Amino acid sequence: MAHDIVIRGGLIVDGTGREGFPGDLAIDNGLISAIGDVPGKGRQEIDAKDHVVSPGFVDLHTHLDAQIGWDPDLTPVSWHGVTTALMGNCGLTFAPCKPADRALLASMMETVEDIPAHAILSGLPWTWEDYGGYLDALDGIKPGINIGGLIGHSAVRFNVMGDRSFADQATPAEVQEMCDIVATAMDCGALGFSTNRYEPHKAPDGRSIPGTFADPSELIAIAQVVGARGGVMQAVGASPDFLKAISDEGHCRVLFSWGVGDQKGAGANGASYLDSMIGDRDMTAITQVRGTGSMFGLQGQLPFRGEAWSKVRRMKLADRFEAINTPEIFAKLVEEGASTDKWDGLKDIYYLGVSETPNYTADAGDNVLRMMAGSGETFAEIFLRVAKETQGKGLFNFRMFCKDLGELGDLFKSDRIFPSLGDAGAHVSQIMDADWTTFVLAYWIRDRKLYSLGEGIRRMTSGPARVMGLKDRGVLEIGKRADINVFDLAKVTQLQPEIVHDFPGGAPRFIQRAKGYRATLVNGQVNILNDEHTGTRAGTVIRHAAPAMA
Image (cartoon, helix red, strand yellow):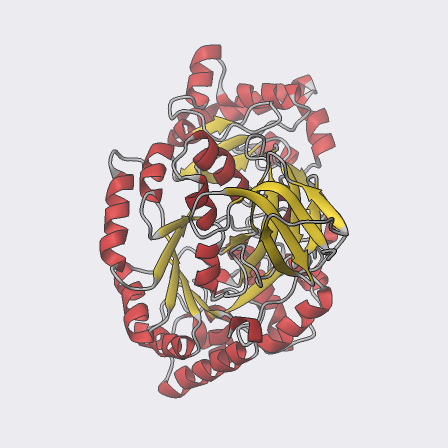
């Protein structure tokens, strides 16, 4: 029998948590059809010698809701082994949406998630009003990877309450209407519901987005709708008591964002707290995989203030580079930038270096302050020198969150938290964390050995697949969907981030390529081959009510 594809001679790490074993894997009609010693030849053969064969990675926290409209390949996550992504996090979605409200929902996505509103309004087809219609539109786009979505609280609340949704409490009738909308959305395919209780997330007029101050009883009523349908509730900025109430009274899976401080013992204490807080509840925390928050560089954000810097900020990269090489402008930039040397945040800024792979793991003291002490330069002088030496490409990473990798590693020892939170599709000109899967492979598994290979793969595959409610993918097993990665663990890495202008209207965003992925298959078709897209787009819109999820 000739199989469609045979992945030959790899180390099979099946996603269950057990360690790998050598063997072949065959694929037919988009499904895994054989594992072990597969005789004969496949119509297509992929040589996996000295490579790991794993399930495709599952990304639980993305904001690709808009980008999918103009980038169906869903970069950069598709370069990093992600075969399934969850959209609609943090309470922000584009459905339900009345035609008159499109600009508001787009502008809220811009102010909260740094996705340009003009790109959203021009790059999405906007042919829908309800959530089922949104998923139907995505079906027509034919994405390169599998995508599933949550329906967001802000859109639902504004749809029901209008301007009152920002600050007023809902009436019982309005709560019931919201519940009905969520129920219909899930019956049409939504995997669950997301909410946002983080006050600094603002609408364009400065008000916290709808849902931030909603009475917990409103969310519990919605959680009961979600739980009755076997869905997941996602929350950001929610208190532990709030999360537990949703779980206890909604009887549903709960997904939430977490973090770790840099004080001694924060990681171990956080892990212990999560274990005791969650107990036997079906709750899963996720956090970033390294220090993150913002990136500075001539090609991106400029961390200085002043008239000259403001003028440079309005320029394109080529003009910025010309400006900093003009002596009088350079001198003015150095003069204005001197005040930044008093900023306490300098201790959390790290240069990513000039090598092919960015240095995300510098020791805590190896920061900009050390560079300043060693060279006698101000930060502005270092910034401008690096910009000149790298043709404007050099970048500095500002670690606002998860500053201490040692503490983060101790937090990851808890079974209740997964590495994740890449925020793909959001904060596109500020950070680049969508490579999180590759970083986990290269750093936490290969270099630090925090996870065994089997356990690390589980936390990126079957673990998050279960949170999404997926039963047909996430493990390598006969009869499961053939979402598969083939990668060289010894070589896999991410490349330097860079700004491109490929959003509608030429808006900027960071992208980041990967190296070491022999192949990524989506539903049995090769999406990535030797780190490059093949042009095949075999992804599906995963719907909650689909038979594969029964």
